[in-house]
Length: 243
Length: 243
Image (cartoon, rainbow over all chains, first blue to last red; front, side, top):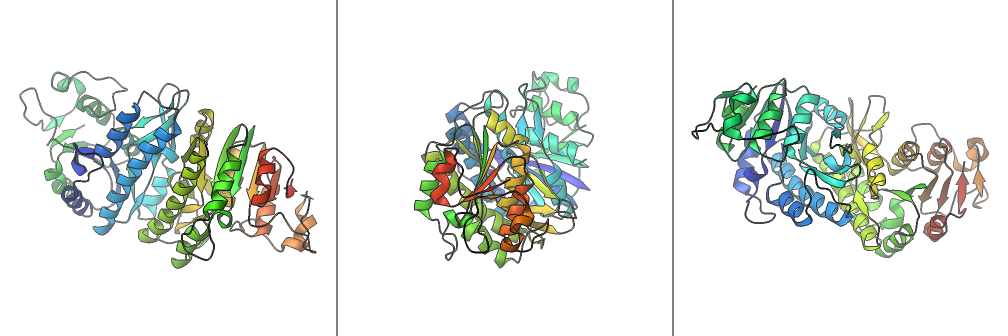
């Protein structure tokens, strides 16, 4: 049983202040994650850590920088957040170890991500819980761009042959046009009106891109908020099931 | 022109105090590295950062740990040292970016290292200077073991098709039996008496293992101390040439 869990940056940080942790939410999330049985991979977003620095330097998933200082700034902020998340998980009894995607990934000129996942596979075999994060990544011809937590979740879920995927976000699920949480999405066309336009490269956090990417996985994915995390950890259907 | 440079942990840290930087040596080394033309990869050892924590937890290149707290302790210390080295290089004008091997490597049950190097190749293409360090690495069946800076230098030199390899260490070169620095070593048998026993897995810092591994490379490697670093950066023969 392998679970890949995304912890949204907006769940564990305070959005309006740079580099501010929402400690009570983080501790609550860590306690829930500690109850997930089997093999677990955690990926967290940038929240008020990564986004702040990325915006300052004008870097996105498609707009790169050749300024090493910008790379160090964004990557360093994400490592600070990652250390806080790993420590909170450790305090909750999780055998958490940090994994920094900048060290293990690159993008081709057309933006395709190449992420090595044999380290994570080895970590799971040895009963560690790898904790990754949205990060910078060097892209051929563009310097360094951003790799989002959502993109990493999709890559890792496929590579680890995950049985369940969880996306713990700021909202309780995917809304329909009337603002009600959908129980299940089986095809993108079912929700295109509600979630809006999307294309294959939209991985920067919009719900449309998230839904499209999660639909591409073999495993069922669930979008829920922190109130749903305990139920997800128990193996229940929660929020919106995608796929 | 691609240069891979190892900066010995004993060169840039004070050996007798845990986690103490030798700042004047580090700044001097950074200024020299800034003058190396072409593509540069830097690898540094653990010195009083990594070795102290590895010894505390009883972890070596062959003895592993399944304690995530031990992994975080050793890896965290090495990341603190790496940040100081990267910052010193940045202050000297080098477009340095940090690379953490734990995120990109694993070992098979027999100890063979699998290290991904496409991120470093992409970094060099985009004019960044990757700065790696000795680290923990997950090994099948053993938890996490140590990967030494020397082992990384050999892997990266081969993978990056380096033209020159430098090993800046605590000694001015490889000594012969009379204590004189050898100009050149072309075969291990030439120095077996002077450097002592070695086998293929001796990569933990002994000179014998270092010589044997460096001889396996296509590129010439030089062993020298910090007084030789400026000359190495200028492309001169310095210390002991191996290969």
